[in-house]
Image (cartoon, rainbow, N blue to C red; front, top):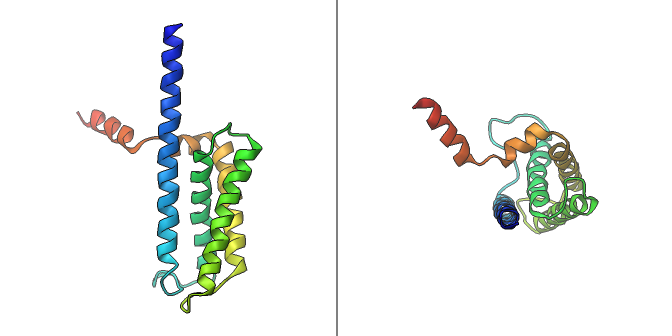
Length: 153
């Protein structure tokens, strides 16, 4: 009985730790996006195709949605967890576009927000349904380094 309690306690600590890391990463992405929104519009100088920004929105907001999804409690298939992650991501997306509307170097673009939503839904769907991808995101960098060092020795 005591072992079961210990195991349960260990699992809750692991979930709490993952949740805190996911929250910290999500807030870091939000901070980076807010910082990037303060600059002139445009992609990296080496990118020379139209609508590069939509692709960037798709992937960056997909990452943000995945982090919110990991932060929120519930099973992988919980509809509330999915909806909550999408809502948090789209809320930030519309706030970001609204702030850009008042920045003379930027502009409000509804297509950016649509790309945010498409990336969010796609990324969470992939995270929920592709176990290899989910496992890759759940693996700690320190664990990977430890395994690599053990292989070298």
